[in-house]
Image (cartoon, rainbow over the protein chains, first blue to last red):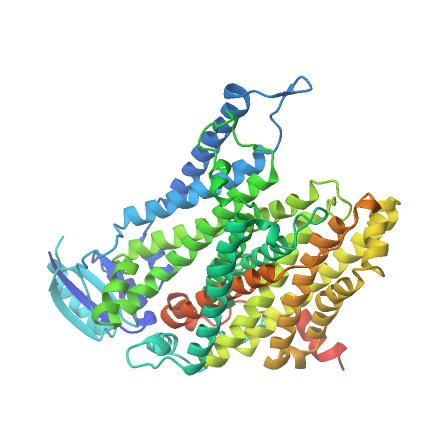
Length: 166
Length: 469
């Protein structure tokens, strides 16, 4: 797929450019930055469902561990101590620690899965310094004229057309 | 209102993003020579590790823990002192990184990576001790709830020792993942800048990371979830370690103050170790523009505050022993500790942990690298003495005077401890040599937004300018 890229070396200029793109209704496909720029998420309305999924994992983990403790203590091997079942408040600690372990592992797995992160993954797009000090904005090649003008006016240091595999 | 800047610049020298990458990776990029001090420190650590863990640990497993100093009275000796000491150090790395993350303290960025690395190696060192202390490591599988074991029983969910195993392995997993995920973007930076085998290794480690918008968004969310869960985990893990002691009826152990006391102690010793490590990193890699005097000052002030809590805890323990009017409690706290057989380690602990850090009230001391370094080492020794006082005296002289005994470690005990120091040293040195020692992507985020907290007149001001005059 053909894309037009504009490269910035300053995040203030980058944000000016992004503002202009949004105001002029030019779609921004992606911005590759060397660090998190939270304003970009707000301006381009980028959301993720990881926090929601984390909550769901937590609820499921709590239910699963509670069931496991109930099963071992009450169903499979009930111990009666003084006529009472041996099922005390200790489960709070195990519930909490087990929940943390489950959520941490599943959240990490979700993050890796959603971004398709795995060892020796082939990079589809590379630009020198994109994880150092350069910020790369990708827009569809069909908006070339408008985008080129905005890139130039907001001080992009490099503007070119590239071919990126899907 | 809100005109005065409380905290100075986080990164000095008006660095550009490119400068940050170059400065942090300078010592590990192609052409950089491994300095002589690194080799010396590495060889010493490696020798300690090889002898301690390569010879004396197998010897312990082969012959049994009879070759340790443990005896009938003191069944938990040197090994458990070191276990609790290492766990304490291992706590602060994550505590430092995550509490400050949750509190949005931006000055954490130049320190968190090294603190997290420290955590991993300290927890590894800690985990070794209970593993060999059980005497029969090959039976350790019975601690895992994989199903009714050979006796047809499930594991005992009521035992703090079992909670300990689960909590510490969860803590190690969480800290290691938090550390690794935080490093992925920096691995991508190194991958882009290197060639040949190094590029391949960092390509694998970076998992093909590219800083797309969505990737960063998910990264932020994943990090905050893992961090947010690890923060209460820090508190729960050391509380659980303290219940190993406090659920028993031994005077000196049977105390409700133990969980907060242990957690605060862990943060105290860990912050001291962070200080030691950051001073070394700042000095040898000349990173004073990233680890500024203000950073060290801030850590010193936290240590000073925590030291006050430690001092109060010691006082409360003494008071409760007196107030309980139990002769056994009084024997431990008012006789043995204050003037008896264990007065030396007890007073050493009080002076090192409660009094020496109070020197941080003076700005001159907070600003002196040498003073900070010496005090941080003193605190680590003090915290080791604290664990000694908790583990040894109550068991050595318990309810029956006829049972009283003495404890002294054997050379095997000492060598295994030195071995774990070597393990920690080897781990930290390899980290310093081959991995990004500071979170570059987070530093870059802070490079332009230098200060977020501004107030007109701070308490700090009043102390520094008015009261002292």
